[in-house]
Image (cartoon, rainbow, N blue to C red; front, side, top):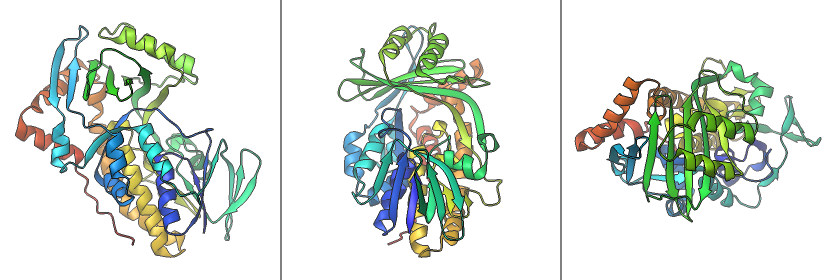
Length: 395
């Protein structure tokens, strides 16, 4: 079977790895000219952690990752408001927990791909025409190629989803926040293995000191209607307007932003397709990861869930021995209810990032304080990081 995977993100790379392991002929197409880097720090645990272990990648992920020791909240004068020890999350999952830069995880996965997988950068799918025999794919470059199946793993703003299922507004649920992230070299001060955040009503900025003298910054802010900031210059201007008077280290963080050539910037949304009869599948085309069921960065587990979905999809295609309709149905049956629960959890966590009222901010800080009480910390952490899904062994 010839399978085209659209998107060289974590979803696309993972499903390609497993498909090739099962003997499928795999091509990845990615619209950017190279593998995406940067992004923000993600927490990696649960079902995706299990998949990474089965891929033999855990030692490298642990070596590139971080064991965050403390989460600290500061006010506009840099005084500590509250803090808690973060290792409770690792303890409740028996140490199967690590924080890692999104770009580092993607690079580890990409470097693990066998050379027999064809990877095309700088191109994308422009048209899809299905028949009983195959899918005729037209690329933006003008090339035409037939494939047996197409997997849309091209993220929140999926081109495959638009072409096959319809416009974004049919499925995207904007959650009322926007987010931005960038890295800067040589930033001071540095506090190792500590996630420091400054939160005001409706917005938050956080930093984390990384290896090689780098610091990652994450902005989140509430916005009823997302600004259509389409280029990096207007995105930086928007962040300066939102955070320019926020105190703490914001002036020097914004100065570091001005010097940065790369910036992740997007609205915070979920993709909700559970009301559609076919869910994520039409004929020989299926969706995967954020394209199918984005939980948003508010869930804190998006990359892990994406890897679990990729493992399930590839495994079911292998088990079905070519009966792709049966495989797609099984993939949706196993993963659909699970990821829907995760989306609902993400909505409850929204106030952690940018509380929309003074009362919500007070409650958020109170919960952080409760994390210093051992038995309360275990209860809160267990509710946050427990995955209730069993991954089959496909052999």
